[in-house]
Length: 390
Image (tube, rainbow, N blue to C red; front, side, top):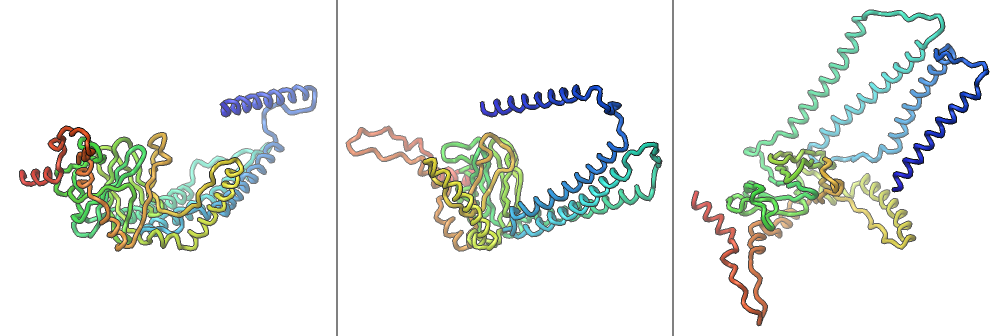
């Protein structure tokens, strides 16, 4: 309702200003004014100087933006390939700024220099082969260099030889509006999965009869070992999502009906990233803002905000629905020893399914419940039977 009122007020204000301009025109009747609608030298001079003013505005705004918000960049990458991505991005930014500075200066300068003047006629050139060659070849060479460098970077990042490289395989499962991870276990092979197998705690549709699925583990918080290359296999249950690891410079779409993949090697643990000077400064600045906001909340009788602590995050970078903004998963980078300890404490999916299917013991003195053990499936037995049948 408030938005509607604001829109109505703005519309009425625009109408009032339009009417005021009409009244001003009426007051000029009989005055010595030029109503020919044809620009004279004075008009052209004004427009020419305004072009220079616009050029200055663009440069001032650009410099101000860099000084004001330049510190908000992600800074140090947390993956082995992150430096390559940042280098490509920095080269692109430098080229963009150089080209923007030169072209904008020439555009506004020529707009002023060749502004309209009374009794001046424009000189028409049909073509200029030399100029056309220069402004065609230079952009072509620069773009070709960027594309070739980009292809080189993309190939180095995306190519993973699973047969020769030692990689840890992890599945990322996307659904509105959460992420779930599945570890492949000691065999480094994920069990087969299909949406038709989704039932109960088996929310990822893992084929429990597949031998490779017997050691798979499903978690809601992603842990990664430092210095180990991780190959992510990505699926989506419903709509198009995008797995985005901003600090690791990694992103890949999760497409329903197919498996996509991306691999990277973490090079800083969560604790190491928290202890970096730039991160401590950024966290302190965020907590200053949160502290001021908390004072306002306390004054209103509301709960204050908790202090911010840095964590790596997995985000969805596709607008996938009403709660897209909140689709994220905490990512923790551990030392290899801590990671092995953490993973060893997690139950396998098979164990979780068996626990869910186990019938609860009847309370003492209560009537005996119907025997449901025949209906509960022993998934381990199912898997062994399936292997034997093959």
